[in-house]
Image (cartoon, rainbow, N blue to C red):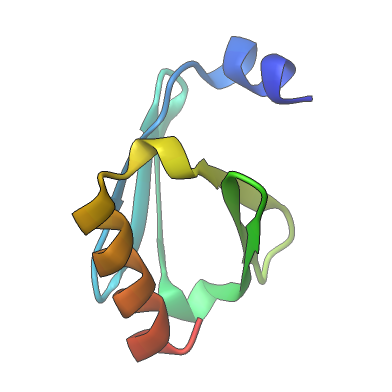
Length: 81
């Protein structure tokens, strides 16, 4: 499944802030606020960000440095995602 996604959208660049998240890929830019997120699951090697509108965004741990991952988890705690 992941190989199909990579073939379709290419490598993604993620940006996270207190306001929400942005994913840039070869098919475009997708931004959403944390109010559009219904849940975030921490799986083996990946965060799975579930959207209220349906669907989910997988975010591999490898896209984060140690500090970036700590900051991301802090944001999740503060926004109660």
